[in-house]
Image (tube, rainbow, N blue to C red; front, top):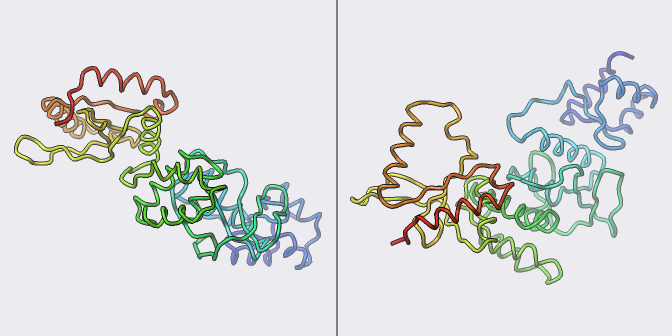
Amino acid sequence: MTHLDPAIVDLARSQQGLVTTAQMTGLGINPLVINGWSKSGLLSRQLRGAYAVPQLLEESTGPDATERAHLLKCRAALLLYKDGVLGSTSAVLAHGVAVWGADLSTPIIRRPIDRGRGIRGLHVRRCTSEPVDTAYGKVVPLTTALIEHATDSGIVQGVVSADSAIHSQKATAEELQAAVGKLSTRWSSRPKAMMSLVDGRSESPGESRLRCLLAFEGWELIPQVDVRDETGHVFARLDGVIAGMKIGIEFDGKLKYADGDAHVLIAEKRREDRLRALGWVIVRVEWADLENPARLFAKIRRAMSLAQPAA
């Protein structure tokens, strides 16, 4: 067959573009036909027993392609397991919170079972909390998801997502700290380390990563600092300031000047000239610097050799 059965299309449309093998065979579709649709591209296999209909998938300007693919698999998992709840990194994404540096190859769900069992390509764990609803289905609460994400993926990955959640006002530091405080000692080391670094003033994953890298080297980066001129007027806001020093960090990963607008470039130069006139040393950090900490630290040390102590 060179086209999908209309009944399959209608069913998938009602399920956000997804359909299961069991549903198709229940509508009288032979497994060989399903396999043929998959090979021809009319169906896109997401998990064993679950397919997407590509023509029904909406283009998104939200998460990147890898995140969209992961969330589609998450929806497929919840279609296969009606009692499932997204957990950990999958739940963080479903809550609309930024994720960086995590493995997005495999959805993570929780089910009311004694031990994790499921199909290949899916992590299944036992349910531990009451779920909440999102656009992607039922998920663990955000504070739970952030703790699980830090435990699974790492401290810096946890900080990036926790900062994003707090900055976007989807959670508070107090709520997250209270949730971490309830953990048993066995599972609390990574979440506690995460909380020692969390600061919702950071405005992007890059800024969160930068703050963590500097902290590991023994430098405290204070996010989003207003700078006043001689009259007390705020004329600039720095992405970060090294505590105790007049060193301003500007993270260029946000592509502030990508359009090359001459007026923007001139205004930025004048702003930076005013900062330098007040004794500030400005260090510009790019995404590539985060992948080369030795180069980043060398930039900071050069600035320290030139900078004045903060007043």
